[in-house]
Length: 96
Length: 258
Image (cartoon, rainbow over all chains, first blue to last red):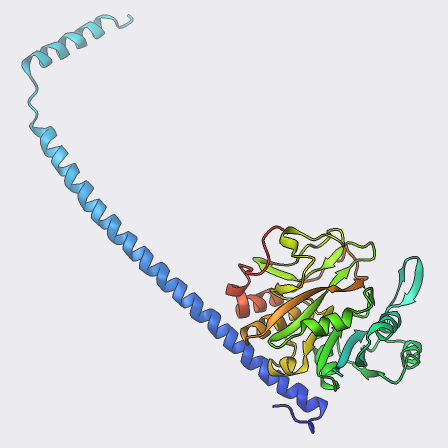
């Protein structure tokens, strides 16, 4: 409220109070916006964490299955023979 | 008739314009009084450096020119508030002392632009060489003057430099603001003594529902040095961001490239 009877000093004092109130309200609004932003960021990170956790479980299952299958594959007799032959040929080519 | 109170902070500095030495504040006010064409008072807020001879020169300009002494360390906001506290006009015209009016109907145009709902009107300011110093503020991560350094007659994209339009803010180097608006938001914040006080003021007005308007038909010279590097204190940046950061990252009024 402006009063015609206010002195300049009284006007300035009133403006100082008004500016402080406006400034605090503005800072509070900025804090609230930042709070909302950080909340959304946390939600986003949590959702990504759930996605990653699910993906880890999926890859671990695939990994276990591959390991199980790999351990059960029998090495055929001809493969053993071919392997021994190749090793002996390689040994024969070694420099003396 | 609408009454205007011009608030002119000054220390009575002298400088050279178009090869001639002048006392900035005297010539600025002389050009204002010669063109105002409205009921006007001029309140010079005189810093402690102001030479007595300049006070005398100001007094000789007429009874509508008064001087208010300011003896403290410089704080632009405090100086503006002090001048405004002595004002009697319906409108305040904040004016730097290193200005000179170009367009004769400038103040009428600014008053015309200061419609209901408008909290501040800014002018087109040109450097001495005719290049653009101010055509409104734009707040898009950095806080800049629209079209800074372009030829003074540039229109810019979508004629943003050549038409009256809403802007994010305007400089206090030449700003018309209704006294009621100034009073409602508590004037200029003294927490920003040198920089961004006009940005803060415009943001306070906008958040309270007023709009800010650029009026290109109001043309003045602003003899501020083009190479001047404003000494910006980190506290000033911190405060302006603490109050308004989310509003200073995307300008809804001015395109990114003018």
